[in-house]
Length: 298
Image (cartoon, rainbow, N blue to C red; front, side, top):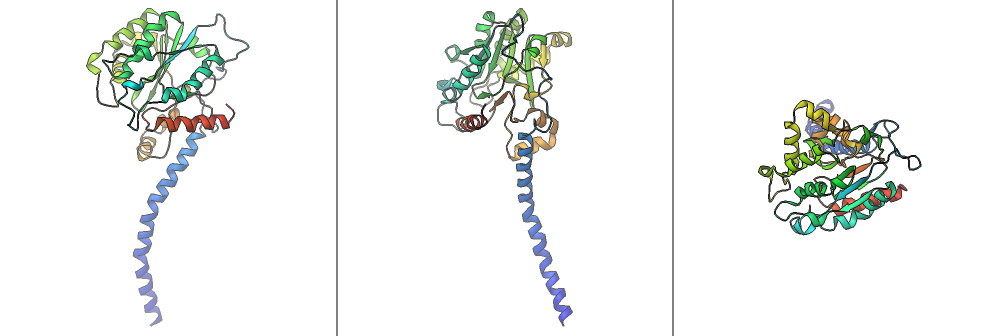
């Protein structure tokens, strides 16, 4: 009788074992996501290189002649759909403005808060075009970055000196219009004017206002020679437009489907900039990252 009882015990435990395995799969997946987040946050320590060697800026030996550069940004809080939404920009510039000003002072750049140039007849993101266009003639380079971005370390001049008129990065969706550089030139002025006139792309009542799609359309429509002469897309998104990577199923899908793009764009300690594109609770993210930078002594 004892062997027979042992057989019954084994059979009764088999379904429980399978159930335990099924229940453990979500926990294993969650642990894997957190492990991926830790690896990506340490990407630079693991050997990722966002910029070419020797591109760091030295305050004691600037290039000659030194270009005149300004950073342009704004947060149109009164035009961003109110203060109650989770993706609201209310208070964002107050939270991050000190970081931007400190960076420009350190680098000898000007900082331009262009909120007075916001056109109330379009979603606020479109007015970045007006902001850059109106100030471009006064500088050699303008560096636009969305209000929801935090600067960390110095970026060198060498990449700017060797580049054409427009420098951008790409993410999972292609060219991103949240952070870019424009050189003062007739080509840049014409591109900005044409970009502003892409009225068919304007979208209201959505987190996608259409300015990014319009920029992508214009760049994709350029003849190959003009594209090569005037536009440069950084091979590494993290050169100046890193995104924070945290465990979500959407990020997991992107990691599996586009691991190289994820690696190139995920924010890691020591990156030039972190851009909170598409994130809710922006002020909380800003406070978290600024606290981390202070603790790291940056």
